[in-house]
Image 1 (cartoon, rainbow, N blue to C red):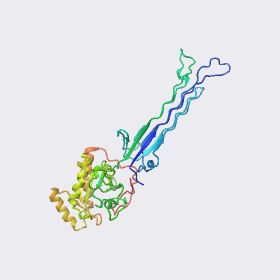
Image 2: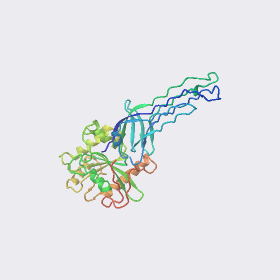
Image 3: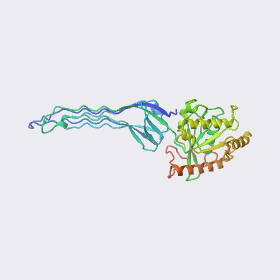
Image 4: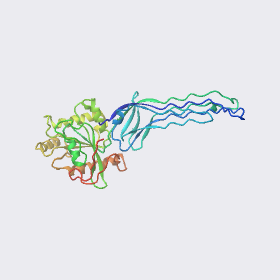
Length: 364
């Protein structure tokens, strides 16, 4: 089961009680106070980790409690601090405070962590209050309670290229052809119900991550058809690969379908409307593809539109070169360092996706 949004309740452990005790030992008159402090409660920590692909584990455990600190004892025996409890989440998870909607942390890199709920401070024993003016204190300070919070965890797919388009535009087929990812492919719309990641290898040193995202429909930006659930995964994609079906099965107009998706992207987030885009006419083996290509060039005034066929392989090499060029420009503007491939993607060396070389299979 793929889960990309959960709400959990976390609470740090309570501190241990401080001890009120006096040293009572034969031949040691007026031994004095020796009640020690209690230990601190355990924190709840959320950390991004390799190999964690979704939030399904948290869907079945929504209440997390930290361990309590050990109470202090006499003879100056301090209570032990409780161990922290760590919640492991996928890379790309954002942590949001549910009541206020405040973003607490964006866990992008491996090892990124945030203390979601702090444990309480241990109580003070009477030895803590000993002074020259008060040599036999009978006071103690109560322990602190653990912090309690309600959090929302959302997963946003990290990918270099995001495949967008109407349902049944051929996104999954293209991903399976370019990589070793094997998403479900069928002739009906909404076959893809959750994002799929594939590693497209150009050669031994160059590769990029491509995300096959569920199809969008009109009204997605306002939540229609689980639009928000799908659109948030596009936010981290470096560039967009917009696939348009030349002869939609539902009889709709290809150009209007393209404009609808562009409108939904810009409405959901203005920055998405400005994201670098490669427009591709899919299913190039169909007779209607050539006509659609000419129409798009004429009405949009663009001569950079490509046509590909995932079935015959026509146009795939040209598409990969175009994607590589756009990614090079995008990375030069936003990241001078080489891109980081999400470590939870297992790279298989060998013949992949119809002879495309190395590939990757895996759902988020």
